[in-house]
Image 1 (tube, one colour):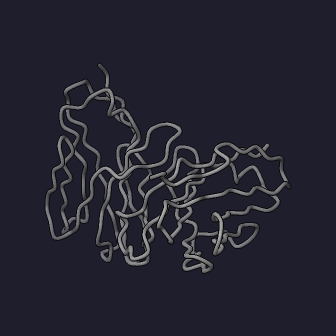
Image 2 (cartoon, chains in turn red, yellow; image 1 turned 30 degrees about the horizontal axis):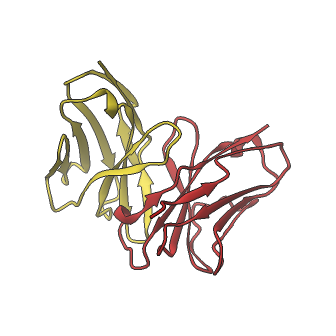
Image 3 (cartoon, chains in turn orange, brown; image 1 turned 90 degrees about the horizontal axis):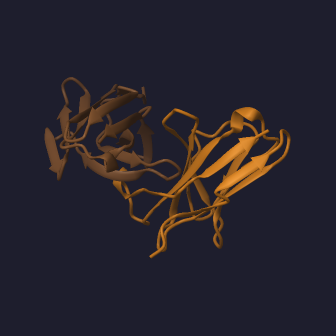
Length: 116
Length: 111
């Protein structure tokens, strides 16, 4: 049973370009979360999605960032017009359909985004 | 407040020693407190967790102590091994499936 998969593992973008980060949850999981980890800091919640729905986006920056989890395919975190401050590790986690507790969140290996 | 404060930022311990990491929280609505272990280049992995109705939980060499009145909890790693060298994060959870993480503690176990 494969774990949470994220790609790419490393992504380099120049300022102003777009970054697309993908997350495939564990088999049978329908809840997806995105977290951002700045260097030497803890993880910060960004957004919580279920299939075709954004449940909580309270941690998402108001501009340039968007997320989706379509009926088919992976969840996508999209960052438009990237700036150097977007450089970070972005982690995706998934949990089963009836999850209500943090212990059921399984993390992927992350995507390291570097903005030049 | 949704903050969780973690200390120390880093610690060095000799093989066989005890590593102690402390966390404090403000939001009394938090009702679940997991600890995560993260190795370089990897995602966080759940290590051990506790609920506020329990004062201590032990799993192998890892123990969580919880002080509800002080709003503090800590992780003890007994008989620390070089393979325990990693970054440890405490976290707190309240309804809504959103984890709030501490800033992390980088642990180095010297052989």
